[in-house]
Image (cartoon, rainbow over all chains, first blue to last red):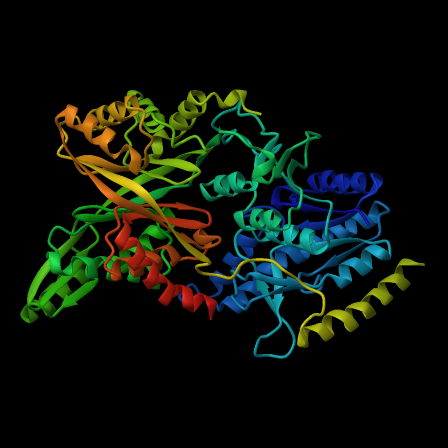
Length: 449
Length: 183
């Protein structure tokens, strides 16, 4: 049995016309002798009636003062994929192709019990196999599974978190020993840069699992790193293709199949805010503990840190702009008390003007010991631009080339970060388009293939 | 076989195979994703750390001057960090003397420290495990290690520090968060 898993994202199932294009891809695969297994995302994006985020917003609006239980949220947002799978299966049936929709649990996808960000523990795809044997094209809800070891009888529905539908597709591909997994989207494959910024950005013919995971990690919406990891682990041929064209797309391959030094592309994240906590007032004997306590607080409140930076007299980090108000609130008037060698109390001031909470803490705690203010400076309107490359960045001169290029273009670089696969610079958001274009040109990525 | 018959049979198959398996461990199953938290820790040693301080204004031009000199000396660098009045980065330990000689010629305030290491903490899908990066950094700092610089990838956090600090931090992570992950 030659199985092909075909995943269609939100834009591919957004309108009747788009769904028809997607359905024709499925029929074409069938004509080529494959047994297609379809995975679908919810229909459309935030603001559209059946999109995952819209459904979540509906539940949030029921009582804006209380966060819904994660279990209830999972049930709510999973409806988007259920509707999408039923509609797609019905469409296929109407085109003369017997089809059945499956929830994640019905497809045998078993997860851990972390609502909202569950991990797949195993897949027992007996129902999918059986449906194929009986001549159906299974249409599986992406992004969901079941937790079978919950406290209540029966299985609890869970959602897989970000990139959940890609993860479903790759995991099903592994469980079914598929010949290929194809991720369908609205672009022709993995591009060297966001085509909104660089019109002539070419589609790469091949990239490695690690490169695509890194590109996704640094902001491009291609294949989620979790999905790439599963594909890599099980050596599944993975493709990124467009629902709306006949282009061949991008094949994601193991590193050994694509040797050699190269620059893969230029990625960028969304909007960030950079915070710098000034520790100049912290005495040397308290320094490490203050740093550790601050990071422990970030961990406790599940703050997602970008560009973590520890300096001589400060610690710095960036957070997504939509998380910034919560982070600022969390830091404001945070009290870090020490009793030795003498009572010293550090109070964090997270905005230029001391807040009421800060002034109250100051007043209440002043009689107890030496009070020191830890100010936080905030740089809003930042973004991270990254050059993703393989065995390239560590060559002599590459950093100089990147930084001098931006310097000559008068684009301020606020901070840098790097890893084995990338070099990132934090820049003002207003310079994003120019920085992406300059770097794309510098590394001659228009010639990439 | 008519579709309705097939659907009825299929429903029966679900009832027998899937619902029954919801209470018992499925017999044929493939394991997929790695467990949450830290999966693996490694230390890469053999680096020297370069710390350049008190550069003259305009700072970025001065920083580029340093990087240009390092480029011309054909020294490979990594983990570049922009500091308040300078920059820092690491180089292969074998280039220690070459870097020192190059920087001395620039007549700037620079220090080349041997025995630097990169502590790499592997944690799959790290960005979506909110708070995990902060927790790792917190535990490393609490171990007494002084982190010079950090970088991250989709599945790992990389921390530059002195080799002895890296050993201490590795032990702390194995005893703390990694043990928790395994449990």
